[in-house]
Length: 133
Image (cartoon, rainbow, N blue to C red; front, side, top):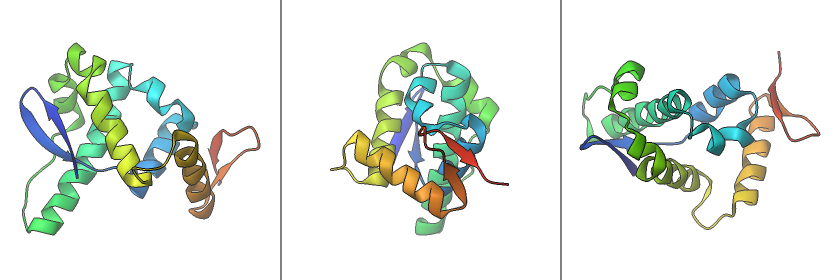
């Protein structure tokens, strides 16, 4: 599992179907995800989702009862340097871990669209993703 390091604290990070659904609801167009990592508020939200899911899986796998930091705590922990380097790389690594490390960005995006369609979310012909009511 990928680790995200914020101010010296290491957190497990997981990109999973739950994240995809929540990010879809939050952004409407998941192809903008990489761009959103340059916005401190959005980067904190994305990071918080990944850490939350990572801690949950880590707890299940290792019979732990750790708590993920709150969104507000993640906002306080993220630095400008994080937005310029390791944080973005860790999010991308978690993304590729989910879609397959050998997959290209185009393959990952197509896999995401297929998964959204199969999970009850829909992708329009223009490539933007929209939730079905």
